[in-house]
Length: 116
Length: 111
Image (cartoon, rainbow over all chains, first blue to last red; front, side, top):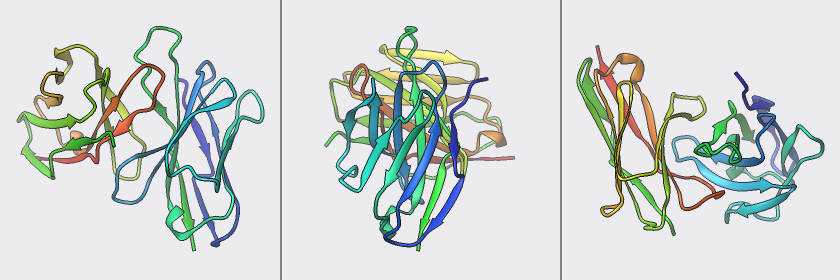
């Protein structure tokens, strides 16, 4: 069964360092998302991406964050200068609207980011 | 601020009982509603979605939607210990837009 894959599964970094989290969405999906979940808190929307551009972003997604689809398969989230409060699980998700399905989001297993 | 609220938990039920999980949302224009299950340390996994008022059944799970009351619920019949997880309610305001998640409710099914 097709799935969303994310790397790395866990990354530890020093405050102020740049981090890139990578995702390979399901191959025929057109909509891509990043969410984050701070330990014990709810799943929070960061950004959605369609047709090679950001379609929506939250207040959390400030200038420190960027997304890119560098090729036909990868979707990346970059955090330019990490802060302690960026420590969280980051989930990539994709969805497919074209087949008349519900547009449910399929989530990857997540990348746990720990900022020291 | 569009909010999705879930009952404070945790909820504990004996094996074989019916678990009832509730969710309210503030955006009256919301069009689609989702229930995800999340095991500890894992990613959310879709259980059901519902668009129309009324009930939708899938195996042991029934989703109920009442748009007038801005209320969506999930019933789990014949609860099993493997159902022990956090259940997330998510709402989508319109086509092609993001899902907004509630905080979740943790269900524990006692053998």
